[in-house]
Length: 398
Image 1: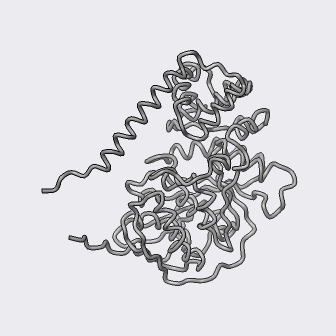
Image 2: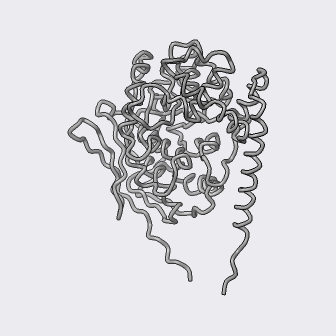
Image 3: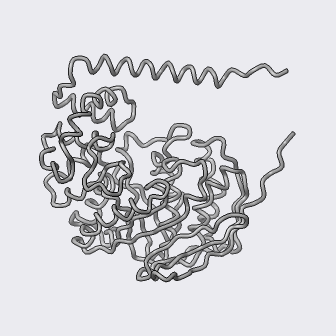
């Protein structure tokens, strides 16, 4: 028996609310659910857009995940609405085949206005966001219409459940760099994660961050989103995988004539992006760590992101420049042999790139490392094959 379809996801037009702390909250009521809201500091209210494009972008994936048509209150830009109904949904379903096609409508539809002059990039202090900053803010000769005018830091799920304290800590650590560069550092807070139940951050990050940028379309006409790898690694993600891998395809579809979203940095490998920081005064702000402890004062130097960055620097002979203020040597050395095995067993493109770089430099992995990595690859292949077989075998039905 076919299940009855779920009711449509209905939102009211977004409205602005100024709270007692001076924050401006843009909130859209949702029938039968918590409102969806985003907020910025009151001093940046002029940069907020007056359309509901951010609501449509934010709620497309939840609507598809649960098979609910989406009706957005307020005005949505015509070209964006068209793409939300057409090319974007097949792209999403190629990664998440269980998601369903839905109809997206709005109270009103209008063509885009003129593009504002602001140019923003998300800045987390990581290797990729630094690469975009260096290319579009620090490099001479950048055309004025492409030069970064604002940095942006979002709280849309990357900091984990209840990650407000970690977000605040990371923002405060990076604020001096923004001040040194003379760039406003915008913060966008949101409860968007509440509307993504059972949907991981990496599988949905493109849409979460794009929604935050659409919120700012009153003053921002171009947004840079750091890619995760070089052009040779740009590809469709694996099933249920990191949708950011398809950023070069997804961001143009999330753009409008008034707001261009671009994937940047694929002209450089992760190795090149990392080594570009060596010898610069900005390297002390590097934060690649996934440790969620808001009290930490340096990168943990033991998580996989720290290990990959530190090994890259060590192979290139530049690690000492980053110790002890950015990384700590002892946790890294304690984990390095174990990490070698994980790295050599990995098929992740940035890991493969690092192994190739180290081999070209004559790096010594240790005599037992490659055999142990081969055993790990074989065990993983066996598990994958068994899982695939279980998926193909259907139990007898009485």
